[in-house]
Image 1: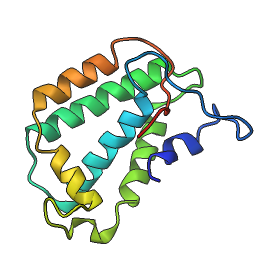
Image 2 (image 1 turned 45 degrees about the vertical axis):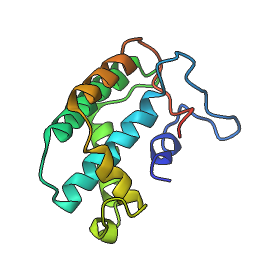
Image 3 (image 1 turned 90 degrees about the vertical axis):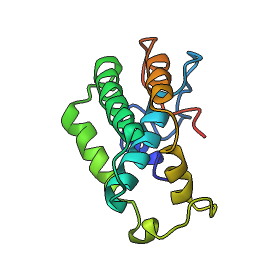
Length: 141
């Protein structure tokens, strides 16, 4: 649902055709960017204590922003990306922070993603961005 915001507002995708799929073997940059937005925006809205994974997520978002701006066939500005980030922020429900870790909720899944290894986040982003290409959404989750 929230991840489609990235695609639905892009003029690069005509409504009469399927969105193109990333064939690089590295992954769809816009999909990962959207997932990282969800992690970052939930962390902010819920007021969770900032941890090392959060720092790695923020750094990863900045690197993906630069990749998207540099590699998009349709011009994209930092301002456009920042506006999309606000859209993600506005879509985190008010009750998102009322959860218990492991309860199976979406927020619990986001919480769990923040408990990993920051070095893994950093290396995963480096691998994702290692091949210049059009940043695409598909295949996503």
